[in-house]
Image 1: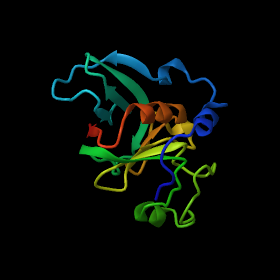
Image 2: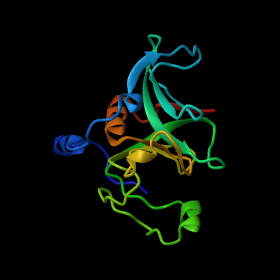
Image 3: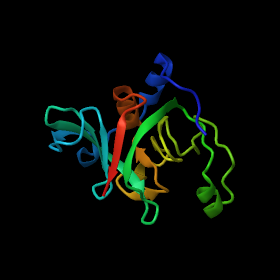
Image 4: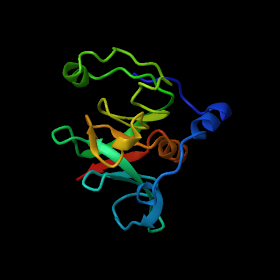
Length: 172
């Protein structure tokens, strides 16, 4: 379902070229974060806010705008990152293929038609991932089948800050 692992110096540089500016209301930012039961280094996705938080442990978190599952496609719970991939290939899950039968069975990594964007981090226990996007206008909306979409420059930033095994919480 996904492609190569790791960033090369050339790939990382290429990812950042030509991404353009993001409106301040849609940019990642450092914010206060006080949830005593969440360990530093954890990722928290708040569906209702359409925001992802990387908990720093000093009472702050990095907050990123995201797209989350459409109504009826959302999930809540705890999982962890079980894989990290750069320029991942994508095979549509059964439900996506059923709803969109014309989608190819495989879209190569790096293709402008690939919805995974520049990187993906798969989540244990299902077909979900936190990933970039080929549709940046969808960030901040309810757009997916349950995955978490980020601006490509934000997935690059988050990818470098977390590791396989990082705890992820999806909450309403």
